[in-house]
Figure: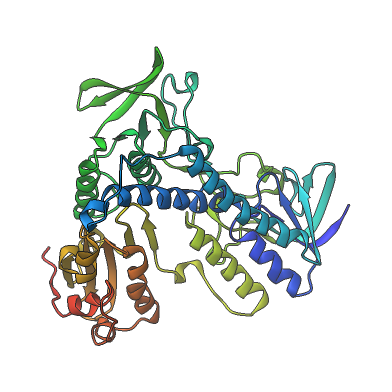
Length: 459
């Protein structure tokens, strides 16, 4: 039985970085990967989807060329095979870089195959059984498939299988009006597909504030995306060469027909075939591995990092999981999951950058707070670029003067939000940012101006 200091199961965002740190510390490491190096982000998540978003933006901007005084002859068309080829090239380069870095890492042995626990300190992969005092689970997640009648009888797409499309869907129906579904909706509408989004909640991205949901719905509808909100899907079936989705809206039945169906209603962890029971590792009812504030499972010597622990569903939180584990194990630096501030982005156009608490969450605390909102049409950089959709909103604790949260829906919102995020990590008062002198012309330069207009948040 080969013995190692550490075994890492999975090569998502946190696993490879942890392998490199452990090897640098003189440890002998085994890495187990059952399929594609790089995990969700590299293969079916951030890297390919943002590459598609870039192609869709290029098509959208080309159609708007006349607004900028630029004349392009003939209609704008999208070559889906070319779009896919570009996406594949970007993904392959990233995937090969991860694979190459691990396979050439001295002190690291890579095993390709499905790893399963046989005991608390052993993992079987292929014909080998590996042993280690420390094991790190980094197996990620996949699309959750709901028990909709008829769904198992038709071809449907997930975020993973969408990556294989090299033809343009005539009419793409998307189940789910949250982050994954919305990004694909706008991308394929801009590629030229008819798109319908069906969401069971009464509004899109229901975890966000209502003003954010309304604004996103408005620019989606302007682009010709059909929204069916407050709709419960009761069944799907094949009708001739189409897919028919039956929906119940407050007791009224209707049918939506399209050529392709994307299921984007959530994610589930890849923990159901790991032999966790053999190791005695506890999970929650949804299959996420239970961990403490330093990402340790209930079994001594086993950690769960990345999406499979349910403590963050983003590439940046997965990488931070690596940092937490490495700091605690190797640097004598007591870092914790609860030290990080909620932050993420929705990569529609315009994008949404989010940090900290929403306005709704702040109201629920009952604490005195201040708020300011600025429409993007008042931002000179946005006006100059002809991209004035959206707004910026910041919430502040009245007494401590620390920023509680922010929502930046608009040009560069996914980048500008870091001005606020960094200040929150520094635990500095908002006045430090208000007095900063930002570069003109940028979107960021308006944050200090905004903070001078804070008003009491009315309950």
